[in-house]
Structures are given as C-alpha cells and as structure tokens.
Amino acid sequence: MDTKTKPIFLMIGAIFCFASMDAVAKYLMNEIGPIQTIWARYTIQAVVVTLLILPRINIYGRTKYPKLQLLRSIMLMMATSLFFFSFLRLGLAEATALFNISPVLITLGAFLFLKENIGPKRFIGVLVSLVGALIIIRPGSGVFTIYALLPIGGAMCYCAYNLATRFVGSDESPWTSLFYAALFGTLCFSIYIFFNWTPMSTKAIILAAIIGLIGTAGHLFLIKALTLGEASLIAPFGYTSLLFATIWGVVLFDNFPDFWTISGAIVIVGAGVYVWARERSVTLLKT
Image 1 (cartoon, rainbow, N blue to C red):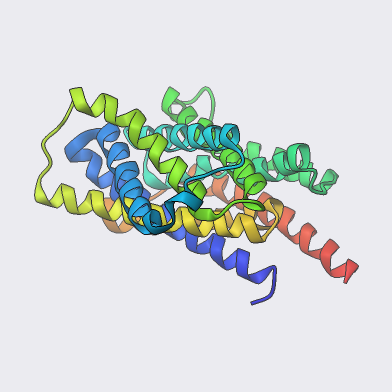
Image 2 (image 1 turned 180 degrees about the vertical axis):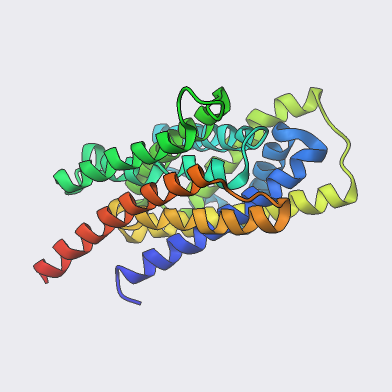
C-alpha cells in the first residue's frame, strides 16, 4: 500500500474494532454496570500489552514524553467513560452519531496544535458537523437530555487523545503508547472496583476478555495509523463507525435509528466527506 492508503485502512480497521467493542460493552453493562465494564476493558488491555512487551519492557516502558503520555491516558479514559455512560440512555447508533463530531474536531485541532494545513473549507466542515449534532439532539425537544452531552464530551476528549498520539507517534513505539494508556486506566478504575466489585458470570468474563482484546487491537491500529498519516487525512474515516454501530445496534439490540438521527448523521458524514474530498483534491493538484 502507498503512504496514504495504508493509514486509511488502519483507521478503518481501528474503527471497526471500536464499534465492535462498544456493542459488546453495551451488552455487558446489563450485568456488571458501566464502571466495571470500563475497568475490564483497561485491565485486559494492560495484561495483554504487558505480556507482549515484557521481553523488551526496558525499551517500550520508557517514554520521552511523560507529560503527554499522562495527558493521552487521561483523555482516553475520559472519552471511554463518557461514551460508555451514554449507553445508559442512548442507543448505540445515536451515541455514535453524536460522538462523530470528533473527526472534524481532530481536523481543526491538527491545524491549531500540530500546524497541519487547513483552510476555510475545513472550518465549514467543522460548523456543518456541529449542525448535524444539533439535529440529532434537538435542543428544546424531549430527545435532548444531559446524556446527549456525554458522547459530545467524549468526542472532545477523544480529539485531544488523537492529537497527543499523533505528536508522540513520530518518536515512540505504538506499544509504549498502548502500555501507558492501559496502565493508567487500570490503576484508576481498580481503586473503585476494589470497594465495589460485582460478581461476574462465565459469560461476563468471556465478554470482558473480548472487549479488552478488540480494544487493544483497535488502539494499536489507530496509533499506527496516526504514526503513518496526518490526523486530518485519516480523521474523516472515523465516520465508518456510524455504519458499524448501526449494524450492531440492529443485530444485537433491535435498535433502529429514527429519522432525525439518520438525518443528523448524514449531515455529519457529509461534512467529513467534504473535508476529506478537499484534502484529496489539494493533494492531487500538488502531484
């Protein structure tokens, strides 16, 4: 694959893993609740990554950016927590649609903090995406609740996580970033779980293991994609999560998105595709 195709495919693979993880997590929450589900997601990842890097822990366990790794870890933990808690009141497709303001936020953040090129067309994409989010949550209607703000807040945290990951990716191994994010989340949630443990059935343990494994794979793909490609290039492909989430929502929960969710999602996707198309056209003109 060429230098642009490979990170794009890695991004799509990451999004598929995340959408699958979210679907399993929403199912698992019915038995053990959101906090223990999040704890399981981080703990399994921490165990898997530690075992894989153990022979070279002296290399992968060191970081040149301890403050940025801490920031990454905090932002990922907050993004995961806010998004998972939104499942308590929102369907998988609705929560994912709202979370999908993140690609345009990443595009804007890449310009502001990473000095990637951006023009007025990308700013238009950001504004249109926010309009799409407002269509879904419909402020002033019965659909709008405090829970609608959770995936939006998660998207903002996820944006910060992506930008920090992109910054450290040029100097550090993806395994280093995976290790620190998993370890931080595990330590934080283990404190709560120690005093609030809910017994887990065999089925719940299997589902927790699945969440941890596919979450690890997804973040490995994402970190690698951000290492190889510009954040503004791969960000629009985050919108594939809408397709995956809708499929999982229908298959697992009989949750069919309503007209407004579909309409808002189309607006958000259209904004992302518009940004991506402009990016590609500029690249082609230069070549």
